[in-house]
Length: 120
Image (cartoon, rainbow, N blue to C red; front, side, top):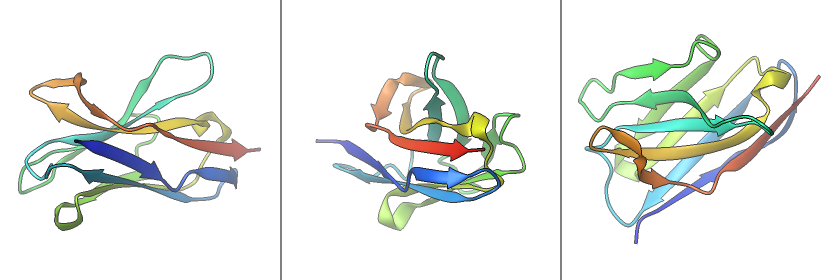
C-alpha cells in the first residue's frame, strides 16, 4: 500500500525556516515527479514546488516561493524535502506532498498534510 507521510511542520516566526520531509513507502518513486502543494484556510489548494524524476531532477517553483524555498529528493531513501527559508505569514497553510501519475497530480498519490504556521 502506497503511503506518503509528511513531517516537519510547526509554528515559526516570520523570517524563520522550516524543513518539511515526505517519506514514501509501498513502492519506489524514483521514476516519478514529486511535488509540494499547500492549502490555506478558505483558499484553494495551490502548487508550491515540484521536482522531476529525470537524472537532472529539474525543479519548478511557484513565483510566491521562488528564491525562498528549495525542493529536493533522496531517491535512495524514497524521501522528498522542502526547505523553507524567510517564511512569511502568507506561507501559513497545510502542506501536502504528492506524486504525479502520468501528467496528473490529482490522479496521483497524496499525503495527509502537515501544518505550517508563520506568526508575524
